[in-house]
Each structure stands twice: as structure tokens, then as C-alpha cells.
Image (cartoon, rainbow, N blue to C red; front, side, top):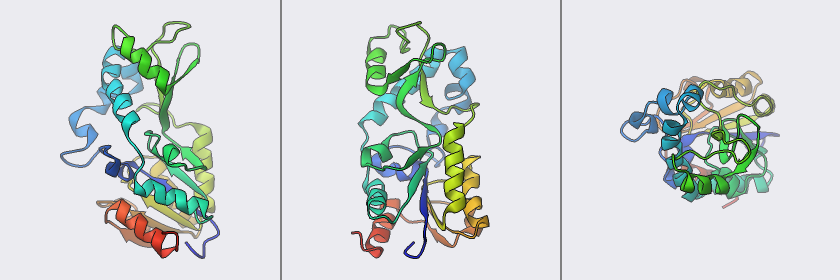
Length: 241
């Protein structure tokens, strides 16, 4: 990182686990062990049965809104502020990088920062969504203009990733001389293909996550310790702590 002209971080659910947010696939605790994503987090499920969809997502909006960044998020902010890190690309929708103060943030899977009406495209911030959830007789927050069920500004299963964010992520990874992959299983495409762009371009890849990933073979550095401890140690090694 000291010698790299461009350093980028790619984060997944594992960086938010120390903040009390379960990841998706860990045995025993993963979110998708408790529910079937095709039933509750698919765009077809939202369109077919918004009441059932929001029975799941209302809990997500309530619980994620209370969570706060942890020391791993703050370590990345310190790196960015000291000019060591150019940007953070995240698969997370939990807003914790925003809360921590990351400036150059690419949220490739969207964010729970708000909802949009799929009919008239009116946008509603998260605080107002929570209020509409509180008073909704059927548990569905609705557009005040046309009464359609609001959709969270997150990428659901069955939806395409936002083109501008994905293109920016690809651009950053292609130009990175060092890419830190933090807390991601690197199994969900197209984001899982981003480290290969750095590797093919001659950049170095570091993977910091619990458990194996499909890209361990291309990693120049492979760490499987606690993400907070690893990033705090990295900050100290860079003279930032």
C-alpha cells in the first residue's frame, strides 16, 4: 500500500458483523439460513406480495437504522483521509460506511437510505419510510402521490446492479495497484469478478475475510483474522494509529 499509486477497498457483509449485523451465509447465523431470499428479497416477491415482502424488510429497516460503524469502518476512513485509500466499493446496504465518513463510496447493491415509488419515481428518505411503516395498517409504506408500495433503494434478487456504480467500480479496480477485499465471500457476481480486474491489470490483491473464497489463488496476501483487528493492525503499520 505504501508504494501503490492507487489503493481501493471492496467490502462485504463481514465488515459489518462486528456492528451486530449478521452476514448472509455463515452456518448457524447467516441471514439466508432463516429465510429463503427468493421468497422475501426478490423483485418478483415485492411485486407479487408487498405485504409479505415488507414483513421482512420492515425488520431490516428498523434494525439497520440502529447500527453504528465499527473500528474497521473507521480504519478505512482514516486511510482515505491520509491519502492512502482512494475509494471504498461496498456490497453492503447498511449505510455504515456513510455514517463512518467515507467520502468516495460506491454502493453497488444500493442502500437502505431511502425508498422509491416504482410507479411515479418519487423518492422517500429512510426516516420518513420508518414513519410510514409505523402507521401503515397493512405494514406496507406507500407513496403519498399514487399509493403504490414503496421499494427500498437496494438491489433485490432478480434486478440488475446500477450501471453507473458498477462501471465506476470496474474503473477503480482496473486502475488499482492494490485492492483490499474485506469481509466478502467473493461469490456474488458481477462484484465477485472485480478483484480479477485488478489482478489482470498487474495490481496486487489482499483478501481479508473469514473462510475460503474462490479467488484465494490470486491473492498476494490472505488474512482470515477478525476484520477489526486486521484493519487496526494495518492502520498501525501505515503509521495511522
